[in-house]
Length: 129
Figure 1 (spheres, rainbow, N blue to C red):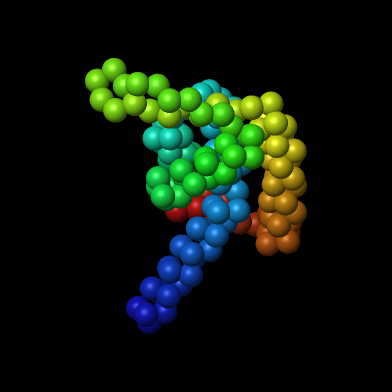
Figure 2 (cartoon, one colour):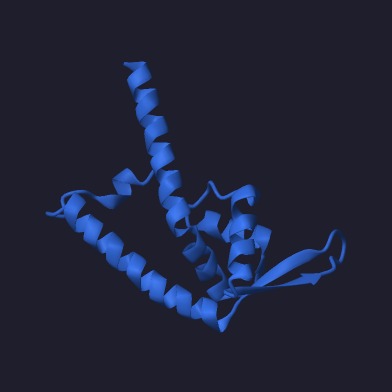
């Protein structure tokens, strides 16, 4: 019985990581839509929303891809009492991408919710932890 629960836990954790990989770029863009941020502040903001598994090894490659594609800009600022930081800002193209793909993601989640819970019987709060 314990092995079965462990397997289920690992399977769900892997599934959540796959979901996150599918939408992390939009979540990063959304944090930058609020304000210019450095990488650690982006990770903290994502954590505030409940996306606690976003580490630097995941976040910084996403930021690099978004920058290379022209969706964010980056500038280096020296630190006042420590090392400098790279600050990221949303570009107009990034804002457009967030709007368009964000709308598409929201449509997708509403559609899958209808399939998974057609009668609205499940209280979402019970299943998020």
